[in-house]
Image 1 (cartoon, rainbow, N blue to C red):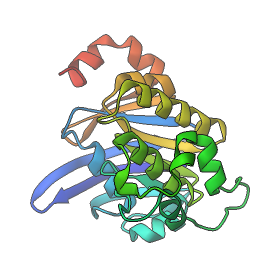
Image 2 (cartoon, rainbow, N blue to C red; image 1 turned 90 degrees about the vertical axis):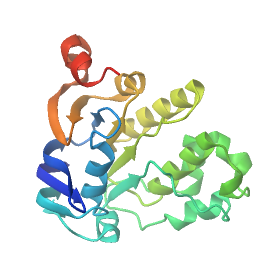
Image 3 (spheres, rainbow, N blue to C red; image 1 turned 120 degrees about the vertical axis):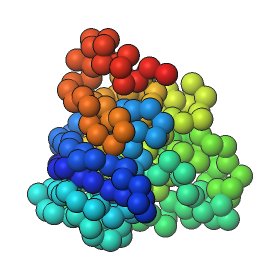
Image 4 (tube, helix red, strand yellow; image 1 turned 180 degrees about the vertical axis):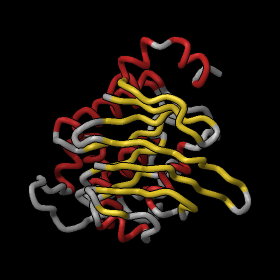
Length: 233
């Protein structure tokens, strides 16, 4: 579904990604774990074209999308939910959702406003509420819903649990499991090992811009040494 090969990226003169390689398989949830500043968000931004890769290759559905414009990548079927959420504060929930609408894709059940409300029922009562008057958890649901309105085949979620109460994190986990059951592939960036374990099939650990460990989620939970070396605070 998505293959990243030897990806490098810079912010100015700062070399952030050093040859990142990872693969997301169809219908699976793949989590990218790491401490703050390890390169998780930069990896997603480089895949999405928001940070131009300085070397390496990104393939999506067998096509080279390296260096394409973000809107072209989105139209190809790759969804992205940024860590900053970036909702339109003056627009209502429903208007925010409509901004993400794209045409249906062959072989996929199309997303609609009603389907988003089924996934996140708490948004129904807020459909006319401006996005700026929502809590952080509500905004996160809205941002995911807006990305789903683009009918992606793979969605990247950057730190969806950050700053959220445990009960909201549990709702996020439930929503990700629903998306997986629908056949959607997910690349998840997380520090929350509870959420990662609850939803993920495979995991990669990034440290200082390099992938240090890749394997099944079950194997990671059994590998105490890897968790202590790369994830402990």
